[in-house]
Length: 551
Image (cartoon, rainbow, N blue to C red):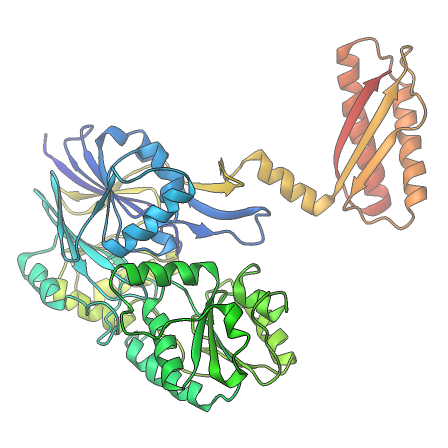
């Protein structure tokens, strides 16, 4: 029986976010596995009480004794965010470059897990031997420090897993893309390239951080009052640009928001940001005149608890904003966030504050490859097979068309759970692994169809009634029931209560409460009656809870 080389995405294929990819090599039933990335995505308003969502790792948890390690490409949340939640089920080695490793350690520290024994730090352009896989880290450029592609060598051939990347000729911080090595890899032969699809619809090149810096300096030179810059904390080049422009325009800079401080500290620890001015504490910054200060803060996507939203709502203890100040959103408007972001923009403009964003000025470049960047990568690598990942279905289907244009012999279209046989034979999807999503509810992982989610959605849509009914030893109702209701639209409260009491009394009369079974039947009958009454009066069928108390 021949050895096989397999690829299986459990997250990040058919969506942008929560990346989790598996590679396997060996005899059927005896495969050795590696995992590349273990990310999260963020919940929207349709899931009340849920913040984080991550891939269900059940398929690989069942094979964890053959899982050789988790290889991390870079430190964005959609690539590392689930690690502290899911690692306890896997208990394997973790491989990361120094900057990513610092942020990983913090995640485990928050969970009170000592990860030191398992976390292996890989130097930039370093290698990891996990027989039968030999993994080489390739420095790329992206919107975070130390983004890596992975050259994964196996007895069946070489895979290039790009991770997130773009071609930035002037990344400002960190090395340029290692194009020489990528061309060498291409000449040596690449069986398959697993490639980022995020910007496949965008023509031209993604653009450079240096161009953003020049534009930001021009914009900031013309602003006279207080400047607030909102950006992704993880984009250290943009963070450095804010420091650079503050210094050039004769201003002090202050960092606002936990993740800004965390990333600044981690970057410093790894030897980056050596030549920047020292930031000042936001409490001290209050004493500096408006035209001499820049605040760099979190909240560029209008997140309700982030620094910028608190500043805009005048609830931030240290940062005040007023008419003629300017807010620069130096970030992309992520699809799905438009509504809350435009609401924030409107709120600021109404107060006489100037809003500058990618819509009206050049203040942002993407960290992902546009079509011209993709074309260049394909010309370097010349893969036999392309598997688009890191995109919604529309991105990945377009990427397959693009790969055909680039004369790639075997593009393969996948979605989460597809198992692709890369070798032997022509690459194709040949099986399906169980895949799905887990929600972090409080601090517990739950399934997508969990009852707690259904209950919460029901409560938010329909409200809640609770009736406590006192039963005498003879089985009659003692006095009126105790009623509580929440979230029900009621015109006349007294009328609603009296009506509900009558319904409860009428329903209870028809029962003789001599046994447990009769009590359960009564509870069911009362639930139906109360919901029916509420539906008639208000149009809502609330979640109903009945307590029977014997006295």
